[in-house]
Length: 247
View 1 (cartoon, one colour):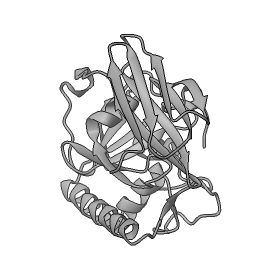
View 2: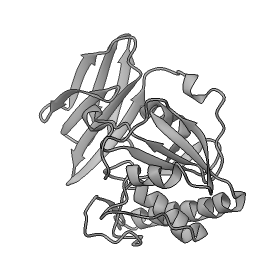
View 3: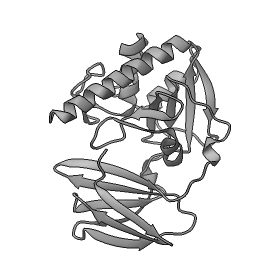
């Protein structure tokens, strides 16, 4: 995936050069730091404990998000294993003020990668699991007890991701990332978002349909579908994970 930003760290100083967007916001460890709509090149200081920089840029009516990790902390990876079909659900958010209200979720497709809809463009990405763990430490991991279910879900997810990449290569930006309430949950190609992506992969890939109690299928809905579900095993849950409202 092409980068929209160049980011360089020298000592405690971080330099950001915008390749495309001229309007963007910067977060340190999910906490807002600054916004700019004038300078293509800016610099700022980071403390030793800062692990990640997140940049939200605005380009051609799209929101693009890029994450940069400033350390190689493997603590979160220790004693964890990941299998195809595992679901990761986080109650925290890149915008700290939304944590507990607007979480995130991703689908594990192999021992090292997830397919997810992170927001903005591109709508669907395949990313390292370690990136999810660093961005969303307050999460739970669920695993389908039926191995075949996980394999079918993963097969569909990868085919869906590849078809989306083909669309982009042809200049077709479908689906786009959106929480628009009028969208159909079972529609594949108009809109998507993180937890809808997982709903689609289980629905079409394995014929397993999660229940939905409202207009949109939120990470909170996904979590409560899974937590007492006999078809799934709880592999890991951070002690601070909680959703503050029923969405």
